[in-house]
Image (cartoon, helix red, strand yellow):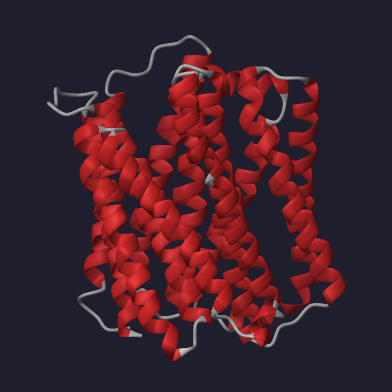
Length: 401
């Protein structure tokens, strides 16, 4: 257990660093800083996905499934090798951006992620492989592997078509889609089903299979939304809209299945954990609604021409959906301690930054001017988010769980 907590604390350390980088990126707009903005953006995005989220999710998977003592040493080697690649990116990206050393560390990370997938498949038992939670986590890991086709394609695209080609952005959006809609969300669903299984809450094979295939299909179909900024055939709008609707229907179906167990689920969670997961569910519903709107021609054009909408959506997904669910699950499994006030501070910072980011997109869409203190306000809101994450990290050293 102590080793697992160390790994979670390392992930929280990354989260604090990316929050600080987020504040620093806001400061660029209110004063002169002798740093490269794009290089910091690369560091911020890579460490957010790979340092905070990947490290946390893989640690949870290891904690739940790997019981073989002989596998622990192998995992320890894999974990620290992965951390070297992440730290390498954290150092190299702000200094040189996309260049030799950052590309080397990024490539090594991809290989480490494949190694983890193989490790997971090999060291889980036959009994574990029959569970619904395993099936979802395995699907999440497959989506993670599929997402890496984007980074591999980037090298080819940059050497042939250049970074101004539409295929360059398409490769990035392909990667991001299968990261958040596939790897992150499907894996978190696996964590949720693991919780259900521990509470002896079971659903029929027919019900699970129906939900599972609706979910998987929706993830695959909604990747078409990532390409709408290129104004492709209307068929992409149809596929994206159908996939988004299917995803809403899938989770509506899951809610219907689990409704009889609502009281049991609530009683087996602390009030704070239940509140966090409930908040994450609301954020997730709004995320799916935004996704559905983004599949229409009108909104897809608006998003393509006003980058703040895309930035707001990605932050909403990673900070408001994925991170909030991670907080809730870590707290339930006694891997993370925090107070209600710390969570409230985090949510205040998150909501304020989202309001300001989407505000700028709306103002830009209507060709209006933002208010004078906009960038200062956004910096302060980001600072609240940063402070809450630092407090969250410090709390781990003040009280034993």
